[in-house]
Image (cartoon, rainbow, N blue to C red):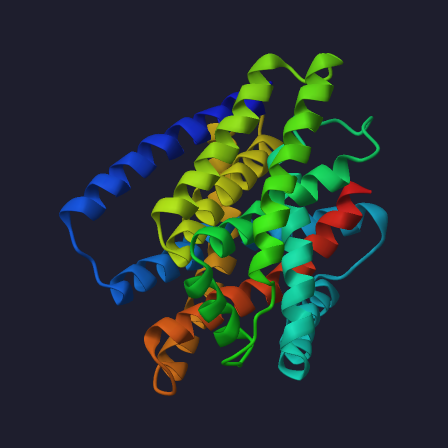
Amino acid sequence: MILKKYFTNINYFFFVFIIFLLLIEGLVNLTETIKYIICFFLIATIGISHGAYDSHKGLIFLNKKIKFSKLLFYLTYISLVLFVFIIWYLNPKISLTIFLIISSFHFGKEDLEIYITRIFKFRSIIFFLKGSLIVLLPLYFKPEETNEIFNNILFSYSSNLIPDNFVKLFLPVNLLIQFFFYVYIFSKRRLLYKDFLIIFFEILLTVIIFYFFSTITAFTLYFCFIHSLKNIIIISSELNANIYLGFKIFLLKSLPITILTFLILLASLYVFSNLETLEEVIQKIIFIGLASLTLPHIVLHYFIDR
């Protein structure tokens, strides 16, 4: 119940934050380059911070189950990161497709797991549908811009990963399936009325950001201020019953890896900005970089959840 309260507050904060950003955008004309730089710094700090705690979480879990050395854990984690880079280089289209599918499930699971219990056999489908909005909405509202990003991270200039007709058909179907599912479990008293409203409020907020903002900005807003903040709160609550004290512990434990990762990403930005435009480099760093970090992150949490 405490976590639900904090999740609700995140959505309220996000709503106010969106209004503030829309007002700022109306008053200040920022260039696309500036927006990209801001997005880069947000994702490279707030966005990746919850994943930076994996080192502590993983070692605690593995030491309970098996005697797993710290060195072996880090080598395994880094090997999975490098594996994604290699596979992406060899076949970027398959890599991106797998990344989008896994990320859709991961985003939906993190958003809904607190509301939808394990008694529902098909909740994994709903998790996927909810998370896939992060992929479908930019393709629906900003198809050209989103496909340009896809083509850039695919090292291609003419690829169309997800056909427009599919997006126009699947997005309404997606929303309808989710709507009827939430109404059904609410009618069966398996979903509280307040939770029912919060889920729809969050979906509405997600639609709003992808409608009003550019693809990169909207994704950054969702990833940093909904997905990451929720994860930080969950981790903080696990570290201490007092979430504020837990948050302090989280900061101390995650800060070194967060800083190290930030410096690596910043160095990558400096090196590759001599080869492509800054926007193109940031796109690659954000999405290919997140893909490489997502695999070990999800694998670790899969074993912990089981």
